[in-house]
Length: 348
Ligand code: NAD
Image (tube, rainbow, N blue to C red; front, side, top):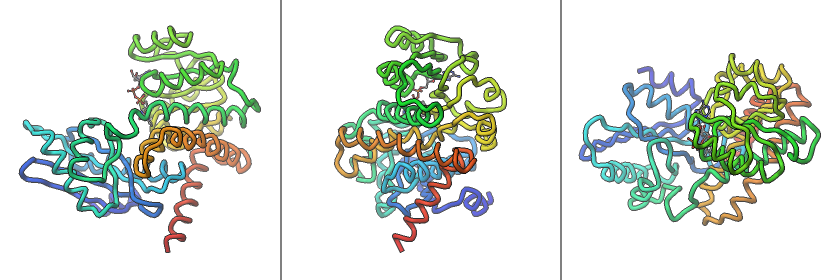
């Protein structure tokens, strides 16, 4: 494997490999950037056939965390762990204890949290051996309502800039995916007087949004064709691609899903079509803002106040995009690069 070439490609940073013979623990801890503070980012626990794929996942996700934390104004850099799920029988608690001991050895440079394949119980096991963990049972709890609150504020900022309106009342939002975040987003939007169309592969979730918020349920294949003011992708990554973008009927795309642009050029495509896209890592930071507060003493009120500021971030991005004729995803990246530059000069 051409290791250093991979690090260069992903603009890294440091990678730590951990192995514990007794438990069979193998982990990759990717620390992308610590200029603004210790790195933060979840721990994935999934089976990988190819170690290179595991490493690339860790690098890509850790870099994304640097950008999300920096734009949210958090005193943190980005990191991510991929723990390889053993193919043979394993003792889960022993694996996580071994991982926790490994984290302790990193000198406070990285805090982990839950991610795909891990849960609060695993974080509790980690907490038994290390302080380098957030998202434990007694801490900040479910991040989804905070993520949804931030997305609602981001939508309000987009509506102010693009449509010149200071309320969502009477606007139509099409939500793709009404799981944890999508459900809470519908609740937020319904409370503001917006009307909703929703689609979910799970009909029970779509029906719940219909029952509780009067949402119109549309087939999953049709959500991009719905005439609306705002499209909110809240399901999987790569929702914005060559086949979906030409169908979008709204002037704004603003939702919670990570990695919404299948490729960066899709951000250019949205821009040239006059569609305002709220960059995913800027608008969906509420969950990270919430969990990061555990490190300074968790306070739900404070988490709410900080999450409301997603409005200012999205508004600044949208206005800069308009005044500089630059796609929003690029404006967001430039803002992060400015902040990181500032962090570096303050640290030196
Ligand atoms: P979730 O799994 O609870 O919800 C996703 C929903 O999308 C599910 O109900 C699923 O059935 C549905 N879905 C899947 N494919 C679909 C399709 N093709 N069409 C319509 N619906 C589809 O996940 P979540 O926690 O709500 O997260 C949603 C997105 O937001 C993810 O991309 C996640 O990475 C991102 N995100 C979540 C948080 C958070 O706080 N949970 C924070 C930041 C980003």
